[in-house]
Length: 371
Ligand code: NAP
Ligand code: ZN
Image (tube, rainbow, N blue to C red; front, side):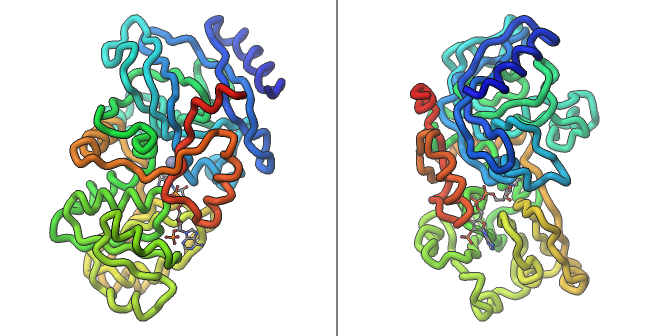
């Protein structure tokens, strides 16, 4: 246990609330510290809250970016940081006015735990665009003070509005990554009209990319995967790709020039996006979901000549996240996961940096019992 975390939580408690309990978690103490076991405070469920015993939590590359403060210009990390926003578990308690869940239900939490609920975006169910969002970790915690703590923990307490239902047919370890990797790829495909007859590219076969392939395939598109890792080719085809291009091979890239309706770029590091913009047809769109920490240069003529567009997309709103989960339930889609105990989380982070994961780590939270 890190004394600092616990003491700070106790101090917060005296300021904000008398009702809290202790939860086990893994946190990072600084941008250069490994994640380690700790205790954190969680609020007791208030009127509309759902308390969840976390069973599985996916490891998103965003967790690594934030633990290491790589997005310091946009979202500086507050330490200690408890990451994790791909959460699946079982409801253990509900507040007196909760109608959406009862004790024993399966439940899931993604990247957001609250928003202002009053702005036009929230009213439209597009909470991901709310100007005052509360993300699942590293955002101000209005109940206990300090910042929110995420899913690398044995429990979490969240307002029912931000808790999702998990289709009962889905494997839980594989369902956890749907809460970020699933919705982040589903939402832009939905927005840009990916459907039967469309040619869709997915760049980077990692956690997001492999979900993008499964979802685009289920939507009926012709799917082409772009990877830097030649030995992922067979997996890409098994996951639902129709074709695979090794992006380092210029001749293979050139064959697809001017042909894509939509390309989803899910790469976590610096790379040349102009090579992909040139593969779009007239009026085609490339959406960035990958979030490298450095700016990506864009050649104006690639966009100008084909009236092509470049956009970005953040996660998805709560109604669309439920829609995505239901879609995955209907199509029996889950992530391909490597289930690990929490004690292996630091090793998993190093493997993410060498693209060595097939295709998402999912932490079995029962392993926290040994801490
Ligand atoms: P991941 O599992 O680590 O996958 C990233 C993939 O990018 C790798 O598997 C690799 O695919 C490719 N890649 C890595 N380094 C590369 C390089 N130097 N050049 C070219 N390709 C490279 O990561 P993830 O969890 O899917 O997340 C991907 C990115 O999306 C991260 O930046 C993350 O923060 C961001 N993200 C954004 C949102 C959002 O709301 N927009 C939500 C979640 C995550 P190949 O081996 O196939 O080349
Ligand atoms: Zn994520």
